Image (cartoon, rainbow, N blue to C red; front, side, top):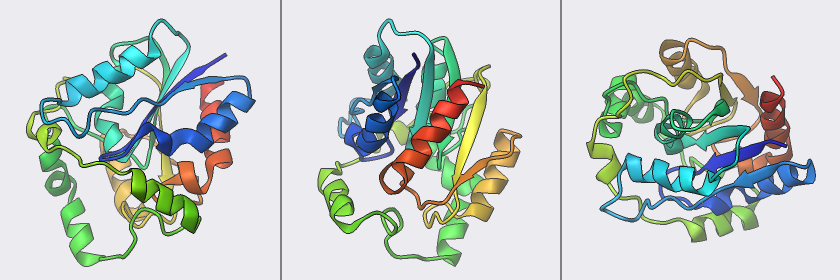
Length: 215
């Protein structure tokens, strides 16, 4: 039985993963999806990783999964536990020593957004009632994690996969493919979803995650 440690994005809550958790548990797996201390100005990425590691506890056979800004936390977790795999879902990919605040300029994401303005960047393909729930649960994202360099000297030695969302308005596919190739050197897998597949395509995403656990 695999445990999936599910890490939400910036200003979000663990609830984001609830539909994926239902699918994983129906298949006999365990999951943890803690709320990160994202609205606590005293908490940085180390504290975010602490929160996930504490939720995992003594469990082994763990797949670490992160969405969006959670990509800065997930490798820190995978570096501290015997993770089976690390999966980024439309995730930001940090470089050693990089401050999250510098990621948009370093990857040219800021330029992408200037050239390709969109409305409803996150929930355009999520059912309206579910999208409204998600918006209602959003929290303020502290700026604290963005100020400090990402602490790892290298990507953790753990099998890594990237799930590319093919209709993502937040991280467009051409942009994200370039970042994945340059920073991870792997080919991403695709899901027909916008930026939040855990809400728009939960079964399909859960099936992908279970597949990664058996590689």
